[in-house]
Image (cartoon, rainbow, N blue to C red):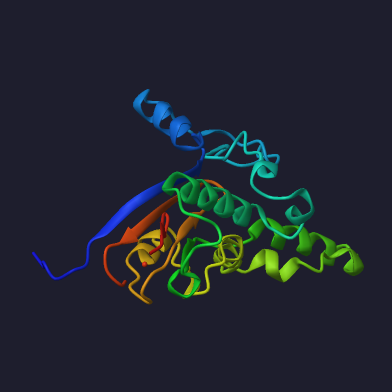
Length: 212
């Protein structure tokens, strides 16, 4: 065993998943053996051989994001930001953070704003180019999840997203770049889980947020 590795303390949790939003909702259903998988409701799946998925239900973005800002964010960004806010609150971290330059954000994202990409494609295909949102690119790119979280808590340290399919969160969690960072995982079908953690010494998810 390598005893030279720095230890990390998980100080806060935030969850946006198909089981629900928040620690209590998720834990209660987990111990009860409940599943978050159910019939697909976001589009007509009648022509597909598989018509079930782990959708995030009962999500109220207005609880975490101002209504005027929702149009600037794809749903995956909203999930990530909500989960990160829960983690920060659970950890009792002030916002803005007291050491901005030593606080970073790393987010593991499987794909990015696929819903926004589909909407823009349909508008392009129909020739309605002027109806494409000016926020199309900021809603699409994966690192805008970490960017929005950083803006929320005023984190000015390392900020980036890892994208490696289902391993995105593991990649983000194992990142060692920077002295302190945070990361969160966001997925439109599997939901989000964010952990806020603090290193004892200078040091980074999730699905995790790591801050000093």
